[in-house]
Image (tube, rainbow, N blue to C red):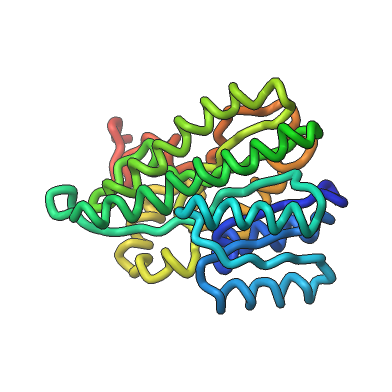
Length: 260
C-alpha cells in the first residue's frame, strides 16, 4: 500500500499502459482520477477500477486543450480535495516518412504527445505549489526518444521533447519537493501497438531484445508506481528505461566479431 490515501491523476487511462497504471495505483491504495478523450473506454476503465473497490473519478478531456486541462484539474481537486500524483500517459502515433508527413499530422502528434504534457504539468504544478505538500509527476516517454523509429518523426520528436522538458521542470519544482521523472518503455502490448506487432516485427524484436519478450502494460505500470511512491523520493529529472535490454544491447543478432 505504498500510495495509501494519495490522489493520482492518470491521462490516457482508457486503455493500454495508462489503464494498467491506474489499476496498479489502485492496488497500492491510491484514490484515482482517470482521463481519456474516448468516453466509452473511459467509462469501461472506471467500472473496472470501481470493481476493485477504488474511489474513482472519470473525467473526459482533450489533454491538448488548455481549457479542457484546466477544467479537468479543477474537477479532480474539487472532488478529492488534493492531488499528489500526475501521470502523463496520453499519446498517439502517426506513421509516415518525414518527406510525406503533412503539417496537420505533425501538429496533431506534437499537440497530443508533447503540448499535453506541458499543459498538464503546468496545471498540476500550480496546484501542488499552492498546496505546499510536495508531489510526484511521472511522464511517459519512449525508447524512441533516443532511438530512431523510421516513419515516426513527429512521435520521436515529441518523446524527445518530453524528456528534455521534464529535466527543466524537475529543476524548477525541486524547491517545492515535487519530483519529475520519466519512464522510457520499449515494445509493449497495447491497443495502439498490438496491430503493429506482425510475426515479422515480433521476430525482429526478439532478435534485438535480450530478454526476448514484449512487455505487458502491467510491467511498465509498476515502474510508475515506484516513481510515484516514497521509494523514489530522492529521484528527480531521471529516466527509468524499461525495454528488456533493447537500448543497452550492442550485439549483432546472428553474427559475432570473433568466430570460435
